[in-house]
Amino acid sequence: MSSSQDKHLSIMRVSHQYHLMIKACAGLGALEDGRLVHKQLIQSGFESDVFVGSSLVDMYAKCGSIKDAWRVFNKMSSRNVVTWTAMILGHVKCGQGQKALELYEQMQQEGVQPDSVTFVGVLNACASLAALKEGRCVHQQIVECGWDADVFVGNSLVDMYAKCGSMEDAWRVFNKMPSRDVVTWTAMILGYCGNIEDAWRVFNKMPLRNVVTWNAMVLGHVKCGQGQEALKLFQQMQQEGVQPNSVTFVVVLNACASMIALEEGRCVHQHIIRCGWDSDVFVGSSLVDMYAKCGSMEDAWSVFNKMPSRDVVTWTTILGGCAMHGHGKEALKHFERMCEEGVQPDDVTFICLLSACSHAGLVGEGMHCYASMVKDYMISAKLEHYTCMVDLLGRAGHLQEAENMVMAMPCKPHVAVWMALLSACRIHGHVEMAERIAKQILEMEPDNAAVYVLLSDIYAAGGNKHLCQTIEQQRKEKGVKKQPGHTWIEVNNEVHTFVVDDQDHPQMPEIHAELQRLSGHMHDAGYRPCKKFIVHDVDEEEKVFHLCHHSEKLAIAFGLINSAPGTTLRIRKNLRVCEDCHTSTKFISKIAGRTIMVRDANRFHHFEDGMCSCRDYW
DNA sequence: TTAGGGTTAG
Image 1 (spheres, rainbow, N blue to C red):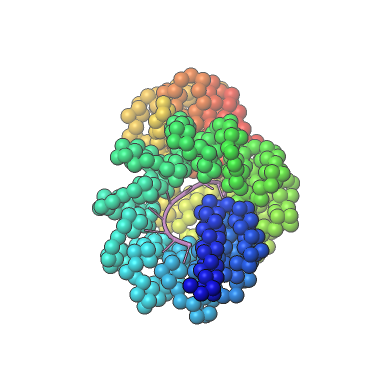
Image 2: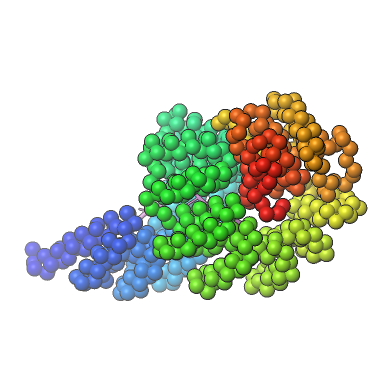
């Protein structure tokens, strides 16, 4: 062997070694170790090697440091398809799908031909952006390049179409694929999130399933609001010998939180400890979230304090818990602690913080946070931040300021921000502004039932029975349906669901008898049904009816009958708690001597001894 | 250098 061949071989060997120590860092997400290797590479002059450079780009991108990836990428004298693909995949991973597509465009302009891995990355980018049009173009290119028979590319195509909502296209690709694996089938199931019947049809046909497939089905039920079915499926998967993993637990905890199933959640927590998943940051954050949403901030803090590592999501979750429970001052205090510990807040952190201020009526503090977000943390306000600010100002009665803020928004105001303002009009009885805003929302979303409900509440509260009836009539004529109210309560480790005017529950006679009994005591204690939102006068019989037909009242009565005296009742309602329910629950908490916690659409109401934690009814 | 599922808010 000549000396030049010898030298070449030795360079190859060293380059390969560097590639392996970098690959390991990338796999472990060990950014600091990766940086050390990078330093050595600079010293030994290997940085510009295409193979080593591509590995470095990949390592930085995988560790989430896209800036460093760019630094290496820009320094490289030559780049191949692997270098470009690593950059594309890195941007997809960081949630920058648009940038990934731009890189793909640039790569082609520079004459580099994509391979199957590039296509997988680009399709992922399209899927993350739900960019069906761009996805179709890429599909066309894939067919032209002859990559459509590749199972990886095929899977990504199915995934892209499914995520873009075109199940027809997904099935077309699926049927043409020469071979399918468990990933192909699972992508189809995931495409049916929200359409659980079709997901089941695919699941039942599958020749092979793994834990990801089961997780997808459990998730499908959670997304459809079928928490109990999700938990049943979790049992079934274990009976069939499939070991749950961290994702399973995250999804199952989500199901528990959605139903406020605290006891079930505690069982899952024990299971997590037995499996050794409790030190995982994803699982830990989900546990914090579950306990907070199930009404136990004590447990949420206990998990939080024991976690070996906490990231921005963990902190944001606990701040969100504080917000939900009305602990505004606490949220602000812990936000400072978070920053002191060197955790960089993100846009979601500020949404939680602003919502904490809003729920606690801390207007000045909220405005300060908002200003600091833009100035000190360089986070530009998104639609969600504007919604929080409008909510904060509006609840506190600064309606004009809130409306000015909407008008001054740099982007087009969306329905949520108008709804926040409309809710504020309801709290403060501002009829003129409410009518204007309702009109605005209905132009954008003619089927928005909540607008009709809010407007009718505002008219009723102002004593305008005629307009109240008119708006109700308009809603009916337009065929706009109100969202039905649901309430969940967990008693003796079992979750029970109630709906408005429930007739089906086997214990209904006892529930009605309990409400009738309470009605008498409440009347004596001074409770009168809230007539504000009732169009006609209420006689004795109707008084009982108004006490009985709301789902949360049925759930409370059920809880009182079936749980041990003195225990706290935890209730979850899918809609806002109505004013009459709010008042009657105060009375019930006093008469029954129970603490009742109600989690409605966005916050907890904590009823104790005839009082509620809300400063006002919101 | 290569695929599929998950945490926070609105």
